[in-house]
Image (cartoon, rainbow, N blue to C red):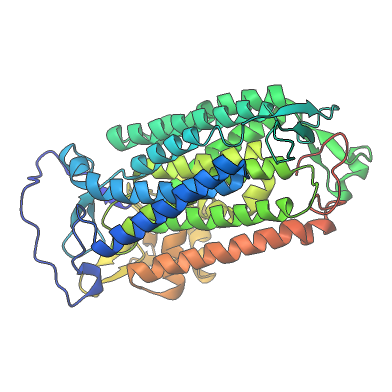
Length: 496
């Protein structure tokens, strides 16, 4: 991952670290990773007791599975927090260790803790299976609309249960997430090259796409109003196999977008938590509409997001500034695939992209370096100035003067305040700031402490996600004929 570098073979791991300087926040000593304070023990025991009671109440009273999912999310938080604390030294002993290059003492801390989150999450989701799939008889409404169901429960109560076909989606989603977790661990172990691992998420998404094809199979999209006359006047356009290529692209983009938008303490987890919260808010909007045909799909999304928020919250407690662990590529792939799963199987993949605006901008902004139009160093995270204890824009060096189109583009970006340039006395560009959103933030607002940069980018994610939901449910009416939050979907089932 961008925020850490694994020690070289010549490094002596048992060298005692420098004494931390308590006068500066960046080097304040943190609690040992193997200890849990009495206050945390009390909080975790209380949380576990409340969650177990909540789950038992749902199980004994045949209550709503969503309430049980909330209880499992609390248990996932407690288990992840404790396991990360207890397993930190064991991870370091087997080589999962990274050096925090944004601290004066360049401390070594455990790496790949996202694997702990992924394992706890998968275990919780497997234990949760009986709750939404318990005691039901389902009759589909026909016409291919698998979300509309008629349910009869042995107790005579009409409870909200998934139809049986959702079990295939549920298990395929777990299989895709498990595959991505394995890929993440392999990347942390072997540092797989980008050209080799870029398309692997699409392979992990194959089980999910097969189930989508067999169970749902809708490949039509709603056509914007202004384009309808050009496409024969119809409201829907059938993309056929092109829609599956689009969904595979979503599965590729989401994990990699989070993986390249990283490099400082807490950023990977913070952006993931913000995105998950806003997806959950969007789900609640649909669930609050009585009898909405997409209710089951958004309940499916919430069942996956609540435990994800639980494990991510526990990881944030360890990874926030000053970090005691690194998340590793495993968490980035696992988090991104979680969003892809709920977006695809929840049938709101384009709504999902509206919540990924900072990640989309970071990818487009980074494209000249990612595609080697500009020099691209191995690590593009901000440069740490030990003298000032602040982060500054990191630089990409030009081994030879850039060609005139590249130089013209860089000078234009410089005038717009989108890049910082360093030139030779004759005006030739010798260095430029690395093209990432982190460095751009520092170019625009100046050097700052690592925690301020993380909170600033997290605030940007909040604003972008709020704007995305506003666009989805308000401004979309300027482009599309209806908002499916308020009106019944057409019988042939367009996807938006």
